[in-house]
Amino acid sequence: MTKLEKIDKLETKARKRSAKRSRRKDELALAAIDALKQLGYARTSLRDIAEISGVSVGMLHYYFEDKTDLITFCVRKYKAGFVADLEALLTGDIAPDALPRAFADGLCASIRREAETHRLWYDIRAQALFDADFTDVVNEIEDSLLALVSRLFQRLGLSQDGALAGYLALDGGFRYHLQRHLSGDGAAIDAFHRYIMAQFGGLNPQG
Amino acid sequence: MTKLEKIDKLETKARKRSAKRSRRKDELALAAIDALKQLGYARTSLRDIAEISGVSVGMLHYYFEDKTDLITFCVRKYKAGFVADLEALLTGDIAPDALPRAFADGLCASIRREAETHRLWYDIRAQALFDADFTDVVNEIEDSLLALVSRLFQRLGLSQDGALAGYLALDGGFRYHLQRHLSGDGAAIDAFHRYIMAQFGGLNPQG
DNA sequence: ATTTTTTCTGGACAACTGTCCAAATTATTT
DNA sequence: AAATAATTTGGACAGTTGTCCAGAAAAAAT
Image (cartoon, rainbow over all chains, first blue to last red; front, side, top):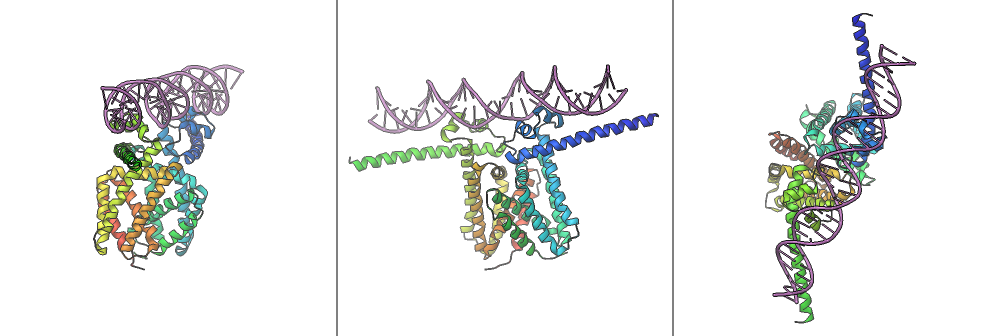
């Protein structure tokens, strides 16, 4: 076995180890999200997470530097999935004039399926107003959501100038109706659907 | 002294006592807001509040039942002032076509003056997604803001149908630009002003 | 001036927090 | 099969949390 082959083998092993560790980290994050979405940032201790995840507290520190590291990792993971879901709608072969309804359907379905998880995003985003540890991840995610709406506007033949307003209208509506939905308003999701359609209806095609 | 006079006297005294206690409570709340706006809900302990207020921890419990009671009281107090400020714009003698700019000026000035305080509102609103203790005060305040925008639409001769969307657009923009302003973006407030004016410009007069 | 009431303090209390680590367990390599 | 490395545990640690209370201090009433 040549020297190069040896190095290759070692590198492969290191990659494998790292991949395994990465998978485990993802598993832990998934379970941690489960705890966080139930209790919220302020009321979730590492012991809560450990208990719900069925692991020991020490293990969380074996995979995550500290609580902040764990939480930002979780938020990134959750929101990456959300953005990817919406992205799929855009890159799919849906005709532009059917996109608004598809988007409305997707957002409403997401509230229905993952209401508890979504509130975690608004929780952390609010935390970021006080805690600089969270500003990076929050800005990252908000930028990616803004870019998403920007691409949506592009596909709809709308001017980019209104993309920020479009994002804020969608996000504001999402937050508001999520809040109502969580507080037991059974009509909130339908209302959100109408809200979105009305928002798209009021937009004029431009450059 | 007749019996009735005696009762009257006692009632006056009781009212006086209650008023004094109420004033002191307001003082304490004002100082507590000072602490909360610096640290945020999750990171503010009663000891932090006591220290910043220059009183003992026990005294906070003498005037407030528990931490939740203290915080909801503070939030109500803060936001009542904010709503009253905006209300003043509406009831003043500003011509309808000058109202949008006046509103934009008012909102921007409020961010400039009380950015740190405003983030507390978004913090507590997010908490309410998890903690039922806060839902009442949050719904109250959000309803009053919605009613405010509704009245604004009325004065502008706009249909009430768009009031919710109008509120969400204003609130979303407020939150977004507040966030940017707090993270050091010196152009955020000007951008917010343009955002508001653009929002009002895009609205069509209706019933 | 004395009693009664209200206000306020400082500290005690148990429960909880994030962090860390020595040792046990398991997996991997030799 | 033995040795090495990675993983996981359970508990120790010091500091913080909200709550409570006996009694001091101040104010009000008699």
